[in-house]
Length: 332
Image (cartoon, rainbow, N blue to C red; front, top):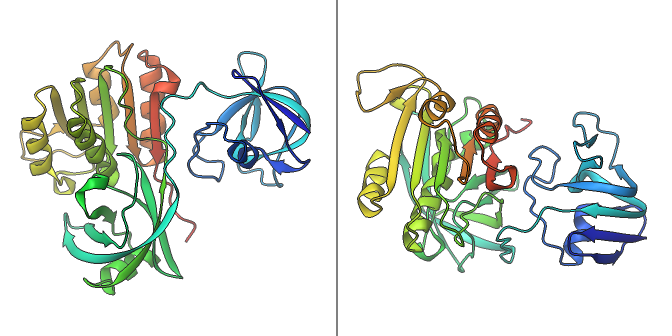
């Protein structure tokens, strides 16, 4: 089956029934993807003509919808090529492809960052190449596997992760009760498309919720390491003052990047006068009526990411300049 890919005009020979995202990857077509489960929407593209159908019978997600331009919006990871077709993918915006690797990591440090957030540091057996803002899958045992974002840079020598301890969580229960310094963890990655873009001088807006601060820290650290002069405004949303962490890291970054502004926003009020009160999206809406020309990096719980995406598009940020990896809860 011939698949024509716009705007570049590639013509691919694809077997009938092939997953569309897999076909694009096998032919070297630059398309962003993340969750591979039809939830994040990162691999969205448009079917202009031809026969592409949803994969499987899962009706939990709307896989194909009519879009405003007369084509049909679809998720490549959840679509099968059933006949000749023409699709349109977004223009690649600094698409970065690091080789996927599996490395051993030795636990070098465990620390409590808050009452329910734990820091894990690993020394990888081999270097892991990734872009600031990406994440990896950690396998503690064959039965304890979860994806977590990397908080530091690839050249730092160690990998750092911030993990929220979920009540009755199977994996976080293992981390809390059994994981110890010296243990070996299998690290697979990198994954994710909400990584730092360095080939522009656009102002940068970062919105982190909870442990979503980890990849945002990496993005800001990466911007400083790359010598970027872009203005950066970082919003850190938390539930209550006791959920704040990493403030010393943020202050140190602000000293190194004079155009970095930081706002910590707590849903609940507290005695700390340095914290703003309310929803993090309300703080952004209060501060900015027009964000045309900005780029945004979002990381946190899906409701926050979705609400922020709607707000930022309404304030003028192009849809393809909003980069987001939402934290989806596991089924167990």
